[in-house]
Image (cartoon, rainbow, N blue to C red; front, side, top):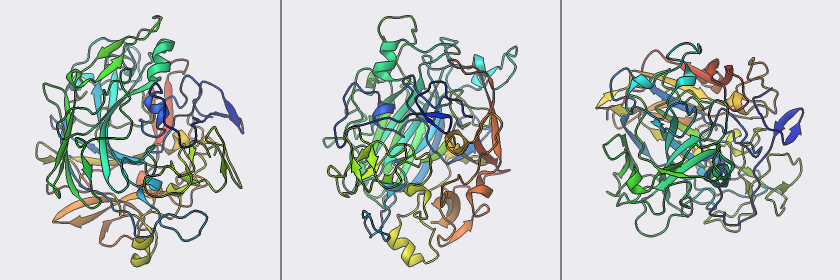
Length: 522
């Protein structure tokens, strides 16, 4: 069993529903962001929203821990923006290129933030940048009980690959980035009022593209803007494939600041999560007849980053993390109906949120973008970099790997790293029981391949890559498979949430290493 609380369709006794979307149509400005773009919000503990739509995602991640003050709220990363391969994706052929938009609609850098309107909604205050917020006990009588945690959101600085429809891509050939912040309108026992749920969603999101001026293109507030549209005008930062960038995330008096410096072009984009920039939250007022808005300035939750610095409503355990968002593209080799469902040979219920590709910015192939819960789409094939033994063929057909350094905090490396994936949370079709851990497998049933992280040395520093075992100049494969790398099942204790009991649930695999496996030289 899995912890769904609202029933829609039944597959082998498991409740599941999928978000429908018209083919090639623009999304209504009033549609909540997490519903309009499946896969762009953090995977929550509750895997269906109040309407019964499935909202789980596959997020293999690298986590970073340090006891040093500032490690939970300030860091700098370096990354090379991935290139797509020379071979282009083609419909209905055995030999085809696989581009970044088929592997991941986004990847991101993350951090936990204070949000007094988000779950568990037991306090109207949150002291930013403070480990006084650490509450991870399973004992309700303890002052550190997780049910007494301050309200929490999660920040993702997301990068979007080029070449497909505006459901994923910003441009035909360039990448862009956005600051997103997700919260949940629940308490231990109640959801927010219906008007808030319909306008902002049960999981709501502030969204703002990084701009040269630091001023949002549209209001980021989930109640007052339609910021997830295609970035327009000369103010938005675009990056070319192959550019080397520096990512900075830190707190300030004005709010959390995210900055990308493109060291190749010399351009800089930024965004500050402040009320002055239009960031806000739906107020948690379950008994209200209508939704009220709360302009909000966001600050990091914690001073440090450890196994105990959690987002209490999230499936994952992390605070400071780099994560890939996979499992959201599958070719549609058939007809697409008006509800966005693909009718093809061996059709299954995740062949949804489909587009015929006619509105694509560059690559015109038909595909479906909902969560790939049977693990048979592009993310789960040997279509990743390093999955072919021939380097020439691999680089012809496959995108370049994600290439990034471990973060530095105040100029220092983090002390420990960990690998984590939330596979059990989305393996309900395969019979994974997150209460006991029974029938949960890594790699998941149905997948021909599951990507894992490895390291290399470039420019005198260690760097991370994601893909298979055959990438040149690899220095550590961490066992050479997802099974070895992501480790055993992880049980996390949760407080109750809107009909769900408190208890320990197995929603992740996690492998905590004894040290920093890939220290950065800056």
